[in-house]
Each structure stands twice: as structure tokens, then as C-alpha cells.
Length: 368
Image 1 (tube, helix red, strand yellow):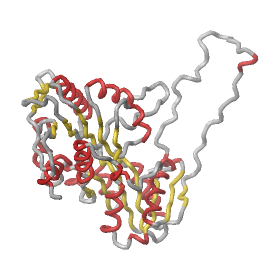
Image 2 (cartoon, helix red, strand yellow; image 1 turned 60 degrees about the vertical axis):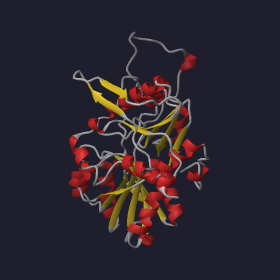
Image 3 (cartoon, one colour; image 1 turned 90 degrees about the horizontal axis):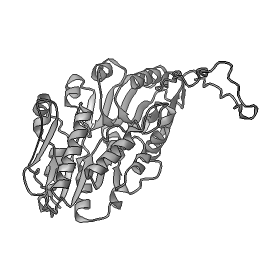
Image 4 (cartoon, one colour; image 1 turned 120 degrees about the vertical axis):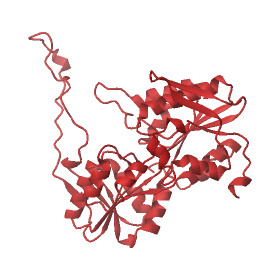
């Protein structure tokens, strides 16, 4: 069925293009975020709304047409300024709720703060806070892709559809990587082993895991918990003395699996600071891999990531367009993009028409 024949009466609503950076406006045709593709696939137009910032930095949202009793889909990609994007989403959702929209569905391909989903020492679970704020603002459903931790879905009091980008990345491997049968799937740390195993089993390829001190991304610094008590000569009750926890000692860096004379494909969900990927590529080169690919769903590519990738042993970085990265692609030709608007548009269509979402999750296991 062609897009123009789809039964679609409601509007897709997105934050105004006027809040984007000028460079993103100019480069939107070279590698656009999912929104223009979604509009074309669904045969729908953007709803009339304006989002802008006051001179004092406050965000203002104005809905320019009636949304009473309608299903509204807010498509929000996350640019460089994460906090501004979050506030725009919250304020627009609340404005639509105030305007008596029937359902407000947030289409957030990359969910921000997803890495802050666990308690770290005296920190906080910011992802849980954001989930509560979105519910309070009026969202009734969220469509997202490859959450950093699947357990994040439990933070929400409304349905969350966590779609997968792996079918598109697997298709890229099969169609765009010559001689991929001679490849091995690599996890750059034990934490990524499950994802790598899923790719390896589906492609019928070998698996390798990098393990060792160079892959430690979390600093175990003294935060004062082991400081002496405020009162000198404080005594401990004889029955309350706890056994001492032994400190972790990272082993020397090793590669579990054979990568000699093979194509190494490193898979992960997010590629932001690329130092760990560059270090993994160097290790794989030393172990005999002759070509190295990095594949991830969300290509945030912050700071000096394009330059580091260009100067590294990595041959190609493949990411989806869940996050705008047009500028980074101009700085580094090694970065390639896979379009995932097809699955997002189908999810929107099925939710709007009240159809089952099971088709989009076929062959998806608990570990995927």
C-alpha cells in the first residue's frame, strides 16, 4: 500500500524548525532526521505549532489549530542541546493536554538520559525522574528505539514501545560489507556481550569479547564513604562487624575469540565518546583483524569524535538517523547512516489505527 493511500486524518506534530541550528536547516537534505521521511511514508502533514525561546531563555509553545479529541504524535529528535529539547517536549505535551487532545504519543527515537538509569554512589536515577515528568506533562504513550537498558520501560506509568534497529543494521552488514561471512562480531566490553551474541547468532558468525583494564569506563573513585567516623575512638558493636569487600583488580586486556585475518564488527547501542571504540580498534588490529567496522543505533558523536574516528584504525562507522549528525558526516566520511523511518512510521500507523504491534517485534527475544 502506498503512503498516500493510508487512512490518516490526524496530524503529526513536531517542534518548529525555527528552533534548530542554522547548520542543521541547511544540511537537512543530505541526511535528514526521521521526520521528513515519516511525513512522506504516512502521507501526513505537520500540525501547525510554533516553538521558540524568549529573550530570557524561556521556551514558549503555541498550538495554532484545534486538536480536541485527536491523536497527536510529537516527533522529537534530540539535538546537541538535550535539556532544551526535553523542555520543548514537556511544554508541548502539556499544551496539547490543555487543548484537550485525546492521546499524546511521543516519538522519541533516542531517549535522553537513558545512561543515568542506575544509582551511582550519591547520584540519582535521572531517567526515572524524566519518565515521571513526561507522564505528568500529559504523554500517554512513547515510541522509542533501543533503550540503553530495557528495564527503563518499567519507569513509566504508560505504555512504551521499545523498537529495535538491529534488523536494519543486520541488513546493512549483509548487503554493504563485502565478504561478511569472514567477519566476527566483537563486543568491546563484557557489558555489550549479549548484544554482540544476538548479532552473531543471527548472522551465523563467530563472537569475540574484549576484556581488560583498558575497557573500564567507570571510575571507582573514593567518594568519602570509607572516611573515619566524626567521633574519635568510636566503638563498633561486636555483633555488627561486616566482612571486608575485596577491591576489584582489572586483568590485563585480552581478546576472547579469534579475530586474526577476519573482519571485525564492533556492535553497541550508543556511540558518543569514541575513545573506547578507537582503543578497541587498535587492539583488534594488533590481533590481526584486517578491517574494522563499528555499528551502533544512536550516533551521538560528541566533541572530537569525527576527528578521532578519521585518524583511527576504524574503517567505517555505521549508525542510524535517530539522532541528527549531518555535521559530523561532513567532518568524517567514514560515518555512514541507515534510515529507520520505515519502522517508526509503521509503529505510528498501527497505534493510530488500533492495530497490534506484535509484527514489529517478531523474532525479538528477551535478550535482544
